[in-house]
Image 1 (cartoon, rainbow, N blue to C red):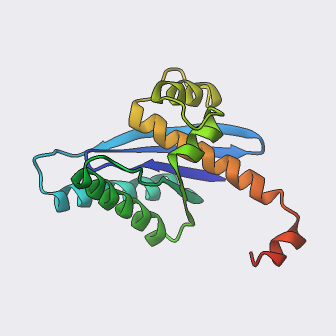
Image 2: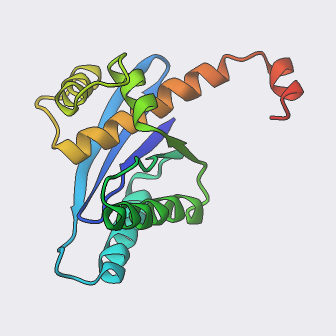
Amino acid sequence: MRILGIDPGSKATGYGFIEQQGNRLIHLDNGAIFTHSKDPLAVRLQIIYQQLCLLIEQHQPDAVAVEQVFMARNPASALKLGHARGIALLAGINAGLPVAEYSALQVKSAVVGYGRAGKNQVQQMTKVLLNLPEIAQEDAADALAVAICHAHSHQLSSRINPATKNLRGK
């Protein structure tokens, strides 16, 4: 399964593509979509959407995983982050892909084993888990971590007995 992980932001939206082959996670690509803070928000959101759509078309993922909004101290920043997150969700769903959402706590727990891990720890573990030659840029590392979280979550849910799945309505 090929997964696109997205760490949304209005200034920088991180993305990371991984492929899950059994128990192995293979790094395919990562980076960030940068926008100019002087541009109107609508223009920045359009850039993010267009770039995500292009990346989805190029890499053909099977699923998209997006980090959920955290509680920010600044309401204006939280709103902008929410807009960028909505754009990420829209890009995935418009491509006909299943879209999953994970909290920062879930992502850090899945990647580092500790929900309150620091950014540096997340970067180090994505490097180790994906056998990267160097630490990925912060936004890209966060996106890769979201993809890893989805791979682990998907792997766990696929191990559930099919009869149990039917009882739960899935």
